[in-house]
Amino acid sequence: MKSKKKEQNFVGSYSLRKELSLVPSYLVLVLWVGFTAVILLWVIAASLSTTSDIFTGNVFGFTSGVHIENYARAWTAGNVSVFFMNSLIYSVISCALLILVCAPYSYVLQRFQFPGSKLIKTTLAATTGVPVIMVIIPLYMIVARAGLLRDPIPNRIVLIVLFVATKIPYTTIFLMAYFENISRSYEEAAAIDGCHPIKTFWKIVFPMAQGGLITVTIFNFVNIWNEYFLSLMFVNSDSLRPVALGLFSMINSMQYSGDWSGLFASVIIVFLPTFILYVCLSKYIVGGLTGGVKG
Amino acid sequence: MKRNRSMIIAFAGPATIFFLATFIYPIFRTLVMSFFSIQEITDPISKWKFNGIGNYVSLLQTPLYVTSWINLFKIFVIGGCITLGVSLLLAVILKSGVHGKGFFQAAIYLPNVISAVAMATMWIQYVFNSSYGFLTTFFRALHLDFLANIQWLDADHKFWALLLSYCFGMIGHFMLIWVSGIERISPDFYEAASIDGAGKVSQFFRITLPLLRGIFRTNIIMWSISVSGFFIWSKLFSPISADTSTVVPMIYMYDKLFGAENTGDVVRDAGSAAAIGVMLCLFIVIVFTIVNKLIKNDDLEF
Image 1 (cartoon, rainbow over the protein chains, first blue to last red):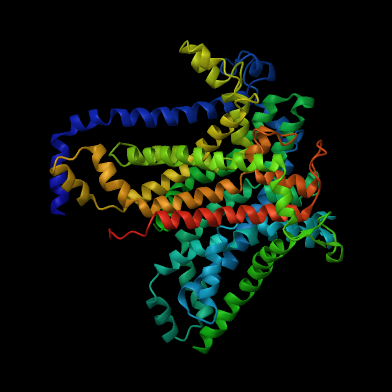
Image 2: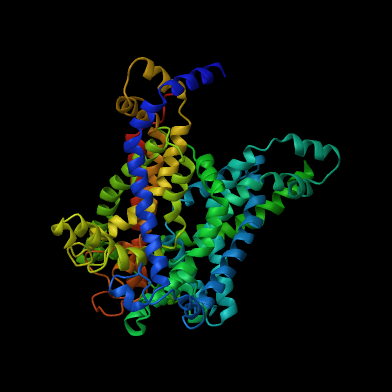
């Protein structure tokens, strides 16, 4: 406390000098963020202008007015509604399943020693570094030979199972750090009152890990929403494509359709859900990354 | 105790079985497959032909595959220096007492939540565009015509354009991890150093860097993991076929698995695709081992 006060006085008397010495720092930050903003603003402007405006470099002029109808066209004619709903289904269900599977799993691994628990923990930690392609080839073999990619419903289930499977090591390891910080005294008190440990977990410990659960769900949601490689391999029909795959096919067909403003409108639509989530919950992302990392 | 046991079985049992079935078993199966010649990915085991290390040998004799690894190494080393260096610089700047730290931090991290397809589209269609693009317009305004006239997306510059845009997106993530490391260094060190008259730069090299060794190690390993999965960016810069300036092992693997649309020189073979997976895994293991040898555990407590 005392040293803090001293520091404040120190800062106070040199405030102007300190601010001047920070000018280069501000310059770097403002240029960096400014560049990001220019790209984003350009895409927003392009999504509201016309294809000919884009190619003449006049997106900020809006000479022919603001074309909000680009969004309507992308949503219906460009099939963005289909990709959007698909990604929403995949991400929401996968995230919910991941929490249902990994929260209890991570809890018992963190709290109890049982035969194999140490081996499981080491294996989980090691597999967070295994490239997804190491697991995907045999899984594709099994799934394709079982004919699960022929019909839409099994195909969707396969995708969701894969998203869950590939995220289990990361989610479980991530949550263990959070359970470690929750005191055991609540469980002990509940046990004395005769509460079954499974009930104690769901009623008491699970809600207390809320911060970690939200953070890991944001990461999982953003990852699954933007996922490309697994869907490229496993999605067998256009109607099942998630947003990343849908956007990619749109870009490839641009040379035939030529609807560039529609493409940029689609880019913005696809970007919005994760952006809104990020703006509302960015403190969880920053806190999650800075809290969960061990040097 | 007995009730705890029933909970452990209920919570850990199904999850472990699922994990073993969808993660551990496939890893071993991929390893086995990499020693067999398997023409179609859906071929039954009876049609597999044992090939020893033949898949590995023939892959390493394929020029396009070797190129894909050279590209990956370039991304790993050059991109790693750029990403880790710039992200560390930004982290140090953020921790130097600027106002609005939260805002800058969030804004720099933002590209990480955008789909890679959308990000790459913005770069390719806008930043690198040679007629109305950001770089061209920007350099023309500064009358730096030799820079303005660079055709970023031609064969000579495509790799660097790819690398630049990929790193830009990754920097925010690593910056946050550096920030978390710097936050754990006690301010007493800096205070003592300031009293002794050490400037900001020497404080950085003598306090911040040595104490960030552990984070440095983690970041290099994490970088190797993200680089090994490099796929979508390459696909977006060369959408139709693998081209030598942007091909990476994952792209080559995909062509091995499902066949390339236009080139006859990639023969479909799931066994070789598995071998590529194993080699990518080895790459991470090697990086992990070297980094752990070179950067020893922190002997300093802080």
